[in-house]
Image (cartoon, rainbow, N blue to C red; front, side, top):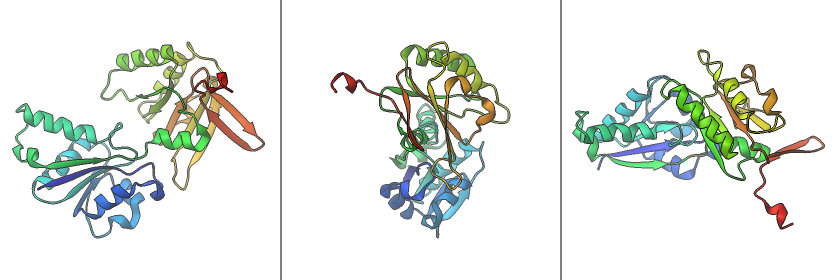
Length: 258
């Protein structure tokens, strides 16, 4: 049967790629991805046919992966992080849904066996670097308004603030979108203290990784880019220090039992 693996390979460190993801890639003849993701995987991709499509070509990537698999080639569609979180998995199933609705002309796609292999997400990697920031209820919000209207994002920001969730922001800033992160900060400041801990994780788990711990009132777009994961604590999140060691954690309420 035709087989398509939809694989998340984690934030960048090869040691954080799940063994199941490695085994799936090794079983494939063809790999479809943004080229950087294949570069980060190193020699596990050797001997495979690489189909490198640039950023912005996500629909073409998903179509190509389905086409290759439908033609009988065991194929992997690869994203960094978890491929089901703001990544390519949803697009694969959206295309299949459109085929079932008669809006696509690729009945062969429906014969493809699909297996989704999860990966460690950027928010998990950032939280692990500073301690236990995601220790209680949390949410994620993408600040990109390319596909989602800002009015919808704004509504979700207010809901996050009202619910006092720890929040991790994906797609916080690009060259053309440089104001959304500051707007998000201003909304959250309506609901939680200025001193709320904020973690900026850039190039997480990669050679040029940087981690910055700041506060919500000092969060600024100039310190953020598309390679940065921004996590904002809730009203209970704590930033603690022991000499040069610093941690951020969000308590679950165990102090009532201590």
